Image (cartoon, rainbow, N blue to C red; front, side, top):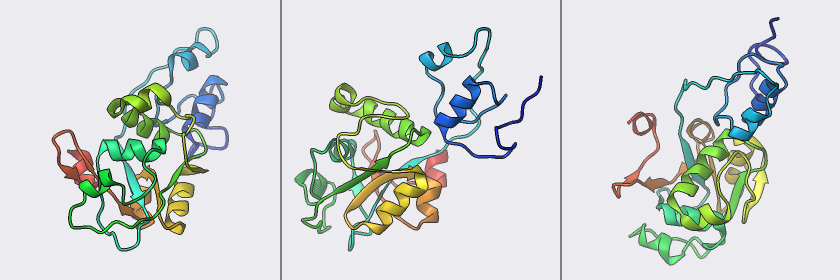
Length: 206
């Protein structure tokens, strides 16, 4: 028996959680998701169903921010984890200032914007935080949905991008393409070698 590629047509785009739900309910034969199915999701499949995962594309999740007068911003993993944990609440926090010599950072509150829906983008971002920060690993963890310690939620990459663009002092995470499309400032993030990297097609490919 054949089924359509997705419930509403062969080219409909769905969030990762919806794709996995459709696969589980066997309303589709193929699905694309930023996040692989977890063991418990595979266990919930109908008896005899076999799932194959294979990678098809690589994307980048970037930090976007809205900070007037700061066209360039450097953040390290401790900065990002602290902001999303709610332990770093001002843009002129000493730990952020230390990574941005010569830049005047305002005494302004940080507003965290995160995804309100389950998503592969959240899975990628929280997997990063879970890897680099022990406190995040212990208290929050990783996944398509997590219990956020702070911030406000917005639906989809578009929702997060729009919320950050419209809110001075805001910071969020989206896919690189959404940041480019919305012409949002993207923070440079320090890599394992200690270099602050600009998100681009070239750096993602590398």
